[in-house]
Image (cartoon, rainbow, N blue to C red):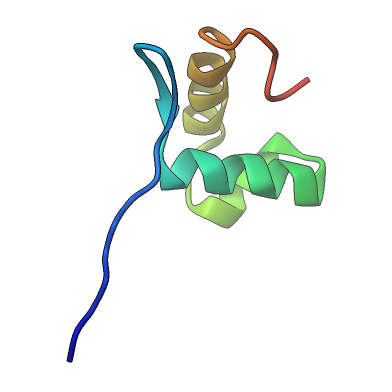
Length: 66
């Protein structure tokens, strides 16, 4: 059986915003409207989610999460 595997990363120039976990976090924030609920849904602590959002917001020309 043949399987295809890979990963997706969000990058802007030399800055990396993150991979699957951070993309999932953003999707869950959009779906739930809550960082706490989104963190729980993707298996992160609130602090981990908050830090991930900070890392994504810092290099962004725009802000992924308001």
